[in-house]
Image (cartoon, rainbow, N blue to C red):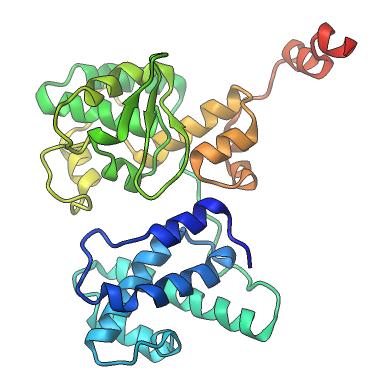
Length: 311
């Protein structure tokens, strides 16, 4: 099985945010399991690495052998969810169970030489994008907030709608991950990815202010100490409700709006997919939000430029 370069680099370079003493003892097996199953898993490799690490550390502490076959037994996974995930919300613990059981099923299929296993979950629902008018009014609302609330709202919009980051990526970005180019463009380097993420021009000024900060603080809600703060987004949006009948800020909807804006601009699908960290086929879920071209524009694109026809 051959993994793409980005997935391989993520697996090889993975290290937990706060590694437990047992990490070095189980790291090799964790990376091996994820590498063997990632190509046929519908889940993001970073999530598989996290869940498998939790499982492996729990198994080691429970006195079980450092043996992936033991780790992925149904009874081991169930015991881990019941006693090793008490710090997680029940829904998150069940999500870990689903990921690990799918990993087990995938590896069993591969061992028998069968075809790839069928998907074990429904296709992801795509959050509907905001309309251009809503986005303009939401930015106006954000700019009229005061103090840190104004900064947080603008940074949230700049990272999710200006750069198309996921909620986990928005949470992880620090000022040290922002870089201003001589052209004025702002490039974002997100931990755990090798994507080229360039902020949309309309939001460059917002992120440029963050890039100029001397300290390496989180860009969104910089006062927090932990990357994965509990209810990081929901607690903020609950306290800051847009006025005038506007919908609440949602990272998922902002990212959807970014994807739809790029697709509406007829940017190459491969470029959009690479920037979003998705496959080109996954972009089809957003296509029905993209407005159809008017006839003159469609004719011009199909015809091509006269100098192109002469070549």
